[in-house]
Figure 1 (spheres, rainbow, N blue to C red):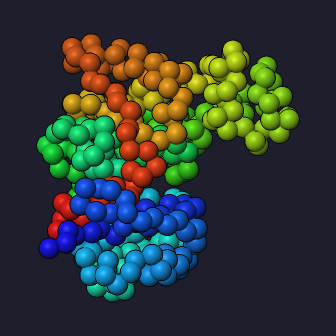
Figure 2 (figure 1 turned 90 degrees about the horizontal axis):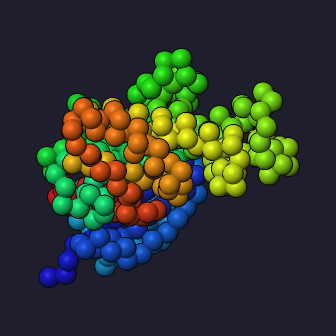
Figure 3 (figure 1 turned 30 degrees about the vertical axis):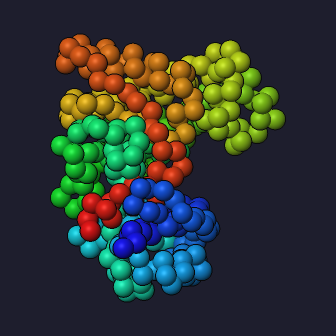
Length: 315
Ligand SMILES: [Zn+2]
């Protein structure tokens, strides 16, 4: 008997990826398509039809879909997605189930990334850990006692919107001082721009030809590595904020480790050293132990691998 396959999808804000994955989590085939608002999933469906041949379709045990936003666990409905404003109350699970007549499992991208890291990545062998991804935003997921924890409706792990500072900067969600508004790549770029706009000295202005709109977290990191004090301070502040957020999560869950993924992992020492110090001050003394902060291991394919793991968990 031939082994079963999983059709995994990672639907992102600008790109969606579709892959055929075997039972050892090996990606056999993969295709990327631009994600469009509105009824963009129709493009994804067409691409699946092109990617997967009939013989393979017969071997597919389930479809796993990873997508950014609030997913109602019971119905597989995308309630809202920050990256795709046109996708409101989209019955993702029903659409793909009606189209392909294969069981469909849908969940939030960060939750499935946590599951992927648990089965095949940095958290392999751990029973309880918290995963966070820090890039333009911050997302999270938890595996507790060996199982992915999704909460009452499927919304658990929206850690990017826990409040770090009620008087802090305005977040993409409209509230002030969310973790995401204080420690993400977007927060780093915004903080640097604001300080320079109000007259602080930095080499960043020259690096972007005086066009502050071009400042990204990568620009700030580069300036910090060249000794720019403003950039170093901005990076340090974001790292301390990251440490505060991680400390809150550790105090709630007492995890065996926290796994951090996303673009921030490239900043390495500039972010991780101050974040670890903050955690040591806040949690280390209180719990009288260090909870390890690990870097995610699966890279860009984490969404696809996590979606496949979610199907294996359910079929
Ligand atoms: Zn927020």
